[in-house]
Length: 473
Image (cartoon, rainbow, N blue to C red; front, side, top):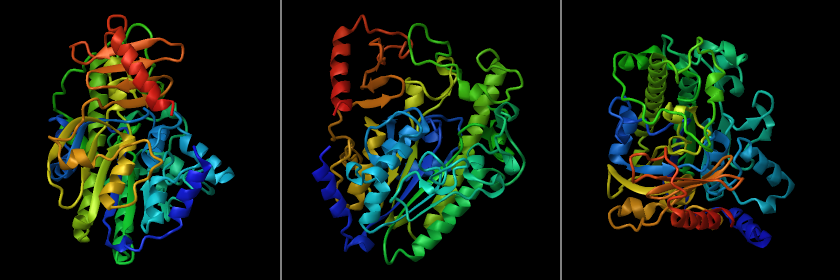
């Protein structure tokens, strides 16, 4: 990357925008481990009225894929608009480089908005560590995960004592110390605040009120990160109630795949207390796990509702762009996986919903394949900010404004973990470091269960070329 070009960006960022007060606010809601397990994405057994309502007046991308099936790397892509490292420390690695040689690091999304006149605030889990700090308990001010990005970055830990405790906290301040002793799911009686997301939502509402008071001086960029439905699956009992007697559909392709794949043994899930049960061998237990995940989705949905209700109460709805984004998917038994970290669709497919005032197609949707890196330039376009020339993504505004006429042919999504993958309209290809190739044809019933690489060599060649062009820039 050109040092001269980045120096030019830094100079541009130093110039405040004279018209910032006239621009739309941005509310970015990040939900951890949220697969498209929502009513508005076709899961009619899920209770998600608030996100459904947002989708009803906004725009859904039904085939949004993340860059990595793990929190840190996926959030790196979101917050930089760029492909990057595949591990959870991706943003901390960027912070180290930024401290040593700032000319080599383009600005983050919040930094770009901040230098264009916005007040930027994050609450909860927006970057990998809730509150955006490092240290043993993730609370050291001297170790920001995203330097020069936020005016305020907050995590109200309450009885969980610190951000590390809140990240995996269960009811009433229970902190994960010995994972084997912590239940993998829980439904405790009480209000939303007995779990960490209740406090995150309350703080987000407080920050929104403060930002609205200051909005005459500058618009705001408020990012709110909800932890659930991340493990352990803990939510107030009232959210489990609707699922007690519901009949869930069968798990599609629940068998462990044969041959070389990115399958894993669900280590993150299996290390919790499971009362000696294995969901791959115990159907009743598998159903319980899925219902508790659903309860966590409904709990997160309720927090989204409170945040959006506050936006309405402050009269900011018609002045604010709202984006709801899931940081990756999560297997609920598909391919015999209970977790993320694989390069199947279930790990990489997550919701993306965008709403802004005066949009032409409220309630619209697109089946175009889009990526997380597209959100940064999209929000810039909608907020009328200068377009960042250093991002790898493309603005999605044409699709939103004219979904039937937008050219979405040939679009693909690239992701990476221990291997690299590309998803096209009809296929998913995975290339392993040793050169082994998985190719799955989504036009067939087998989908991602039958490797057809040997039968379709032309497709392998074409997708390999596209993958290299995208990642070898």
